[in-house]
Image (cartoon, rainbow, N blue to C red; front, side):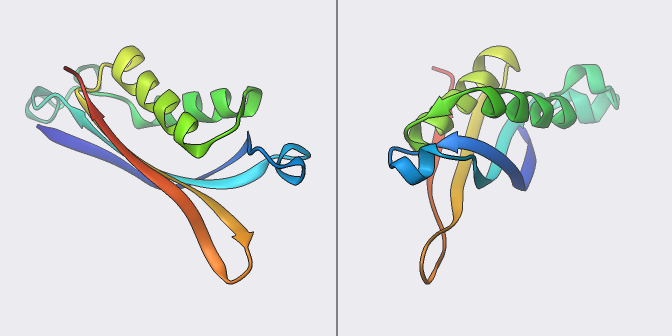
Length: 116
């Protein structure tokens, strides 16, 4: 299996349970790795792979209009998009809030799922 990765994508998202988090969008960093069919590289055909530009646009679109309480829920939601809409066989995501605690650069989650 081949993999595509998107590393440290910055997005603004409505996420959190505390009033200060609900007041305005927060900056998140998302890193995503997902499996793609081997034949895409062999045939040099974008139609046989997952277009990372479409993935980035779709994630930004969804996070701009939804509110999530937990990073874990965002992770599961994005993984669902990748598995169900984009047809990825395997997905790993890392999502981090940036600068939310004094002296801490990032706080986040990592989730990995595959089709069963």
